[in-house]
Image 1 (cartoon, rainbow, N blue to C red):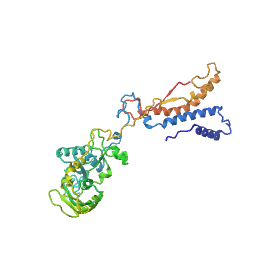
Image 2: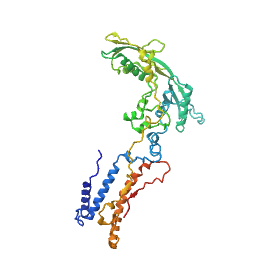
Image 3: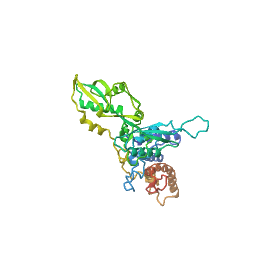
Image 4: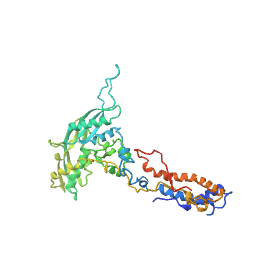
Length: 439
């Protein structure tokens, strides 16, 4: 709840301060005293300024509904995708960039240590060229390999860092692999749900792929918005979404996989009590035991549901189950979504506020004084003595200092909607205008 200044608290604090400063010279702090009248007028002005500055930010920055280009995303402020996007810098940044290319399932970068530096002086120990990378990509099924590799090269060269380049692009081979196991189910376990959860767990373990999120989904996970956009170029057309850096860093290019890790992944599935005779099941080959499975060089495991051979048991008796009816469902869940516009998935909309036409107006505190002071719009009578007119002008001059301070804030607030406008403008300075006339 917004807390506002209190008039009585301000007035009492002001009188206390005056007493500490002028207690020996000024002892009358009643309402009829002109000094107290000035104090009360200034307290009232502070209340007005306090209210304006505590308006919702969306209201303060709201543009005039009739302004040219009102509601457009490019006529005033920058959106997160515009202001936070930047060129990839780290290897993780480049993995994000390449994984977002249509047709790429996963991507890794390795520092190229096998590229000789032929420019070294004679007699110097041979070395390798710095700044080169081997790019290893796992492609999705059914894509045009030539076109995808060309897109990978274009992306790397377009966004490469100074003195860095790619040595080559290696398309990883796929080793189709399933599992063989006898699974004992719990009494209340649903065999279909257990099977689907097992396939998801095995897929995440044997052949993980980056999971893409919308911007709001990552914000809901507690990721800072600057970290979400770190290393992400400004995407004006299409993207699959955002990658969680922590999740991506855990997807490593494996050289071998262990049976113990697969047991651990499967025992996280609800409904499984025991697993017996867990084995590797390469497609087209019989199942084979072994605590370790070696992956050939420049290859990745392609977990293939159709190569699995599973037998479900409950209380020692076989449970009938046909896995083929779920093949289409599992295949559909593996596809990436493509977003063709920034909003609402890849950027945040501009906050909608209530436009306040009088936000920048300032009404001089001199107009709030009693008429007897002669400093309001009516001024002093024309036939008043010269000394009386001079006193009024002297008071107006004294109050002008406070008017300048109090009037500057609303004047600046009225110009906030133009503060980040990068088109034609009157200048970058913020100004204010007094509404009403000076006496």
